[in-house]
Amino acid sequence: MISNTEIKKVLVTGGMGFIGSHFLLKCCQRFPSIEFINIDNLSYAVSPRTQKELSEFHNYSFNETDICDLHALEQIFQNHEIDLVVHFAAESHVDNSIEAPLKFINTNILGTFNLLTCIRKVNDIRQDIYFHHISTDEVYGSLEKNDNSFTEVSNFAPSSPYSASKASSDLLVEAWGKTYGIKYLITNCSNNFGPRQFYEKLIPKVILNRLNNQKIPVYGLGLNIRDWLFVDDHIDAILSLYSNGLFLNERFNIGGGYEVSNIDIVESILDLLDVNHGYSESHAFIEFVDDRKGHDFRYSINNSKLKNATGWSPQASFNEHLNETINWYVHNRDWWEK
Image (cartoon, rainbow, N blue to C red; front, side, top):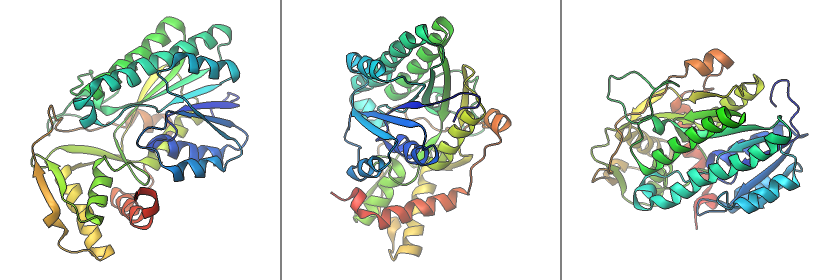
């Protein structure tokens, strides 16, 4: 799994979430000799179907644990000889962070500190444990339309409580690497999308609101631009870093390379639903609402470091992945209908 390193046990935090569950579903199948231990607090965004599908793998186990509970984490590290920690667990919805920032401070900062505390104790005994911290491009702040894309040396300039909490956790990981010798990898990804994403995020919200004949809220004039990354491409990028052994106490940006405004992506989804799934006049469901506080204008990722190191690139076009995502939600109502 990691080049020139024997990996027997992997601890995944937040493995019931969107990106974490995709990582586990792919890795449990691809690496049958590796044991994957998933810890998750089973928050509001968890699907019972995802739990069932993961439980069918012989090399998978689940432990309901909150990373804010240091004692519970210490017990897990005492009971298992962990070789790799992949840290997906996070509060991630910007709107929620604006309304209730404390939960983001606790989970994203304190939770990461707790993991680092456990890893440090292991690292003092044996220097063969690795830590992968999954982060976001939002730590870099906002770009104007003609600004150069974010690189790994771009300054941090977070705008929201969410992005500030992730920037803080990134810095903690780097400091623990420098001070305590922890072997780490940080990846900062752009906006993920794909099947199994909770409906609070833009793409599933547009799809599900239209399927339910509900208004589709769009912030401001919908001109804010995001760099979109299909979730399976994200997982492949992570695994390409592992296979090249790139736990070099470095940061890699992962982006899909497709920048599009919010209103364009909303209209594209509605057009595809009209053309391919029998809906009509879907644009009438768009409703422009007051803009989000501190709304970043544009995100854009420069992938050069990742591509040069691994040869990774997205496997299909954005439009192909978007159509695949829409089809999944249309044909998997049991996943999202209550």
